[in-house]
Structures are given as C-alpha cells and as structure tokens.
Length: 308
Image (cartoon, rainbow, N blue to C red; front, side):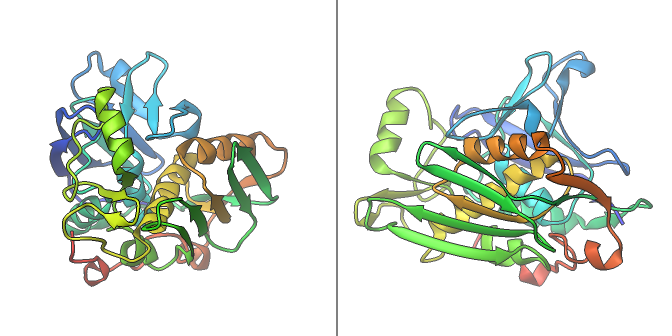
C-alpha cells in the first residue's frame, strides 16, 4: 500500500547557508499525490508549489535545490527527502515559509523522529516503483555515480579525503527494513574548517554552528565538540544524501546505487541519464513481497537512534 504521514508535524530552525529562521511542516497527502514542496510565503498558490523531482533540480555542489517553472525555489531539501523516503512515505506536502529547509542538527534524525511520532498511514493504492533494468553510469570530474539492477535498493559509497581524520571510507547497505533509520539517519553533514571560513567569507554557511549542525574537520582533528557519532560518519552522511537525492525520482527506486566521491550534482546527473536511456528503467506496481523490501517498511520507533 502507498503511505502518508498520519498528521502534520512541524520543525523550526535556520537555513544552513542563509542563516534565516524557517518553519517546515510535513502534511498528509492523498494516494498518487507524490512528494511536493509548497512555499507558504509565496502567492498565488499556483506559483508556490514545487515538485520533489529530479528534472527541476538545479545542479549544485553544496545542496539540492528545486526550482519550479515560475522560478520559485527551495534548497537544502536532501535531509528531509531522505527522512521521507527512509520512513517509507510516498505522499506528502512539505510546506515551508522560506527558500531553504532548516538544517536542524545537520542530519535527518529530527525529521525521522518527527514523522515516526505522528505515524505512517496506509492508503488504498498500490505502491509504484522504478525498477532499474540496465546499468547506467555518469562521471563528473573525479566523481562517479552508477546504478545497476537489483532486487531491492542498495546504496554503496566510497569517499577519499586528504584530511586524515576522514581519509578513505566505504560502506554498503541494503536499505530495506528500516536500515536507513538505524544506520544512517543520525549522521551529520560535514566539512573542513578552511571550507567553512571560505564559505562564510562569501556569505554562505551563515546558519552553521560547529557541533550543533555540522561536523567540522581540520586535518587530523575533529573540531566539533562531542566528536563523531560514528567512526565513519562522513561516508554514512554521503549515503544519507544519496538516498534523499534518489527520492527525487518521483517513486521508490529499486536498484544498486554506487557513489565514488559523488555529490548532489553527480546523483542528479545519474537520474537524468537513467530516465533518458531507453529501457534502462521501468515503472512497476509492487506486490506485497516487493513492497516489504522498500525503505521504511516495518520501521519501529525503537530503531531510531537516540543521539539526536
């Protein structure tokens, strides 16, 4: 069955890049609605709606930004998208009163906990999903993203940083049975101290506060108070971002995604190539067994990390 959130849940915070205060509310939606964003501060309503879809995403190395035909945008949507997808929500209206989603603690855990407090409502419609039929790969600079056929969604990621506190990290996860909530949702966005200083000098990362909503590295040191939540938190966060960006396909994706130094731009380019490649992907109606292998199925409150 398709799902939605049982009742609305709101989150308040600051945008990571703008520093502006913002309120975001996830609202229930009917079957076949999909995931849409609505800018509550924009009128008329027809101009305020933005589909959570890969083909309206602007390529950006820092975040995922969606822009509708009227030029109205919402940015840094990857964490709330990861939470929605990871909790198995297929239909929702995400209302926001500004141009950037709140960064909160830099992970998806606050969104996951908010969704699970409200609960997930089954709807009277069969789940649609995109089944990958051919391997598709994209290379962008030194970044590579690939998606291949699989019987469920798997995410594999490899990173390699000069900073010794990060270094080389790799991880593979089957995203079935609530593994996103257990393994990835509390992993925070990360950056290097020099990059933070450069971004702030250029008027970005104005809502960032090390230790509160990002992990900051400086060579061999973790600058953020409290240290890491996982020894491999950076690669886990990259996987979190990838799940959120894959959520822009418009329905659950069934395939094996691999990212090598990949980011938002590379994953978006991969989705564009996937849907442009003849016979590489098809939409299917999921039977009960297939639906049980999708992200979020069977997720329980006790599986959500308590750290966030």
